[in-house]
Figure 1 (cartoon, rainbow, N blue to C red):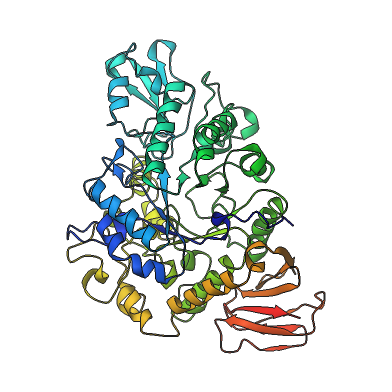
Figure 2 (cartoon, helix red, strand yellow):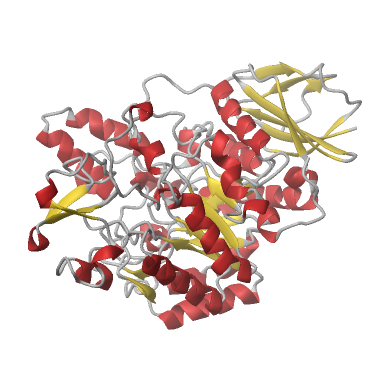
Length: 564
């Protein structure tokens, strides 16, 4: 087990992610804003969380909802002004909350002044800020794009008779990190925000920043999957180490990298403290568990198994048992709501599912990340028509299937489980029009179940609500260092209904039992040495239903026991 003498605030903190467009509208234009976050700071503080991760609020034309940045030092007018941002930061500091922002530097917007200059001529000083392929060299080697309707990451630009690279939308050209001036620009941007008082960055697709600029054909060993290829750029660690040496090491800040394509074998290359790169990163093994192989957005036909779920988390815990530190998340702005995906959002199982998943995140090793609305059990909206979607990913993929004459009904059915818009519906504050998010029609429809108790006001008034359980579970974690730093041991890995594990730190030992079943389920734990098991928190009134070392759980029950 790692020593906990050198305790870090970002290890012991709990992160609350806010998608500002959907959190709270104060200007009544149907779009959330910075003043809306300020308005809700007391609520956020009441949850017991410590860190806010704020999705991009920089100036942007919004092709990909702010992940296409046109000015890194300005605030998007829809969200407010820099004065609003300064007030937000001040309000957070007054409440002891830390702020982590998004660092989106694999690409910019095509409306950023760097790119506008870059495309003017081949000898423009900003030309090498991006990746260009001159047309006289022929068609560039295939590169895949997440959001391109033609399935290519190269876009022809007539003015200079060349193609530019974009791993994402055509309006998101990739930056050329090979150019030291680009790296200096990014370092200056980071310093600008740190000097303002920001406490860290979530680094968007940071594993993609290094490219082999010879642009070879995709090597056969990747079996046609571009994601791991993108994540193994030749100078990735050189660039991350440079960021650490020149910027991050100068501040007491937190870094978490979004790292698609990074597997268990490469994990410590990023987060071993001795290497001087990142504090932690988001892996994607869980996020791909219910997807078809090499199909990022297609739900797999066979249901995922609990044994697979356990295997993912146990393997990643083992990687960080001696060095480094992990992150724990079940959903975010790019993935559907956790209770709909990993639990059961039916009326009969919704409460236990939501609270069981809270218990899971808050009893595992690694910094827990909660997405706005997760604390009240917000669910997938499951839109029926393409006209209701706003996400570029869903809209472009619909267009591709339409052009190919594919099954559009099957696509919409898939999106009910897979679409990113499931996670982006407005925060459900109360039972008034538009759930108290706005007095005007929101940019994205509110889930109708806000009128059925899935809103903050209703749950504040109910001491047995999902919200109140979340607050209690947060305090259980904070009161017991073993649940943060303790050793993790998986019990009965083959059990397909109950996830059981222990957390141990010195003499403190806890048993966590989580049911993932729609039926009552039993588990025998004869292999565990203990005389008594005292429940310290449970989402079920039948928490003490055990005889000796055999426990019986109701559907989606979660109980944490102290062992003696």
